[in-house]
Length: 333
Image (cartoon, rainbow, N blue to C red; front, side):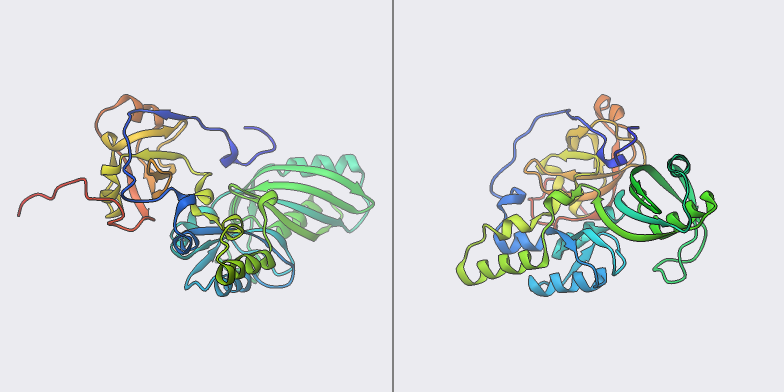
């Protein structure tokens, strides 16, 4: 594993198992959905400001876009800024997959006493790998010791007692606790001074938008009919699932999956390499639409080398049933 990337960033290659075509009579390419449907099936990579809670920011996004539902990718404390992807409308069905994706932070840690730079770098390096953490008293989860993985810690700069570091970690890792534990290991004590999230799954800082950007784009569309800016600040929800292993299925299999059916080998057209059993995968149409989140029962090689068998069980349907025509027949009563 590369020392400075999240697990979801490892390159996969799409391999083709069979060929088929898709009809333009049903479904839409994600970027070509009608604008209201586009919003209802979109995601905003929001630059969370310091001050409000993640819940408050999500509520503001919902109000700006006049939506009934919206969900964020994982809470940031009020004082923390940065990447906060927010799934909109029907796209909230897939928010759990984004919440469980790896995160990256830029963290400013303050040491309580001066320590040599060499020792700081060594101790921080020692924290790569599994770490034990107890959630803080005020938290959204049960207080019990749990294991979280630190994928990488890069100490970028040390000045006096301030340590700037880049940390890639498993979802649910508490950075305040990490700083405290590093201080204990150093023997001097430490606390988190500032924090900014720079990655959540497939989302990065280079695509961030502000609440003002979102408000302006929505007003331009509502008042002038100009949807171009809105389509820039709101992105198709499929971009929020790009970190998951991808499987492309036939049009004839889509409606059955939308009604909860498992996907079998004959319905598979293409798939990513390196899929493992028990991986969470995402099924897509030939047009690139997300269909469902599934749990893999086969590895990539098995899928490619077999003509029969169940590939994955459906865990969370994203697309509405009836979007694609029924390609299967019920047994007669």
